[in-house]
Image (tube, rainbow, N blue to C red):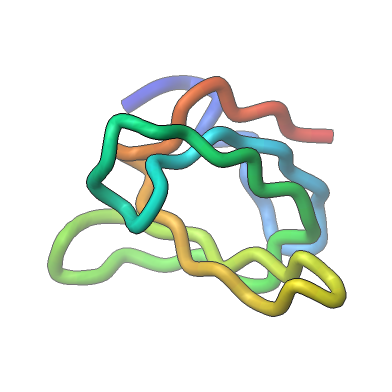
Length: 69
């Protein structure tokens, strides 16, 4: 696992590219506050609050270029 994923903590801000619909080769940028992290049956994930856009649950293994602050 990438060392940067250890920096993803609840309450922190994150900006990440993620495949559209979770599987396509088209990337979309998601930015927001990490509300929850966990380990599901398909691997670790983070739930991100994007403000007016709502909540997104993103798997760590599909995140590309994560930037944590």
